[in-house]
Amino acid sequence: MTVVALVPAAGQGTRLGLNRPKAFVTLQGRSLLERAVDGLFASGAVDEVVVMVPADLVDDARALVPRARVVVGGAERTDSVRAGLAAAGDADLVLVHDAARPLTPGPMIHRVVAALREGASAVIPVLPVADTIKRVDAGGAVAATVDRADLRAVQTPQGFTAQALRAAYDAAPNESATDDAGLVERAGGTVATVTGDPLAMKITTAFDLRIAEVLAQEHK
Image (cartoon, rainbow, N blue to C red; front, side):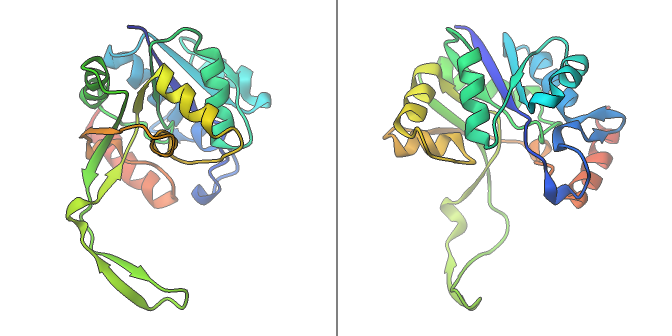
């Protein structure tokens, strides 16, 4: 079964506080986009990678990740994934991976793909939630303490049969979402889980980038 990984990289990453799209921010001399794409190929679990970027950065992205196919993304993440799905052709399995998770280890990518090959239609890597979780009201007062035993933090790549992901997007033509598995859930699909990895952390803030710099140095 052909596996195509989609990497949405059109977001501006305003919370990172830098004047460039987040995927093009460098980590130890290499952009997050390069690291994410190279990690997917190095895992040996994917056959092709499609990257979705703003129209004015297509040439820059092609220079950074020549092994990937680069297409124009959209204003919202879902728009970019739609563009990636259109470019994925007749892929059997589709991964959707954040460029902002540049240190994702290969074995975790393999776990996602293996679960799909074993029959799951949608798979997400997850980690247990370590912090105590509180639900608060509109005024900021604690309304309840949430039992974290059944809670999980979700990472990427999220994996899908192409049929399941296309059906989920077709069922929500005008919907914007930050989580592709959520669209599959809303369409009535079942989402399986595999064990994630702390190295697959998402870089969202300047603090995250500082942590990733240390981790990248340790895992050269």
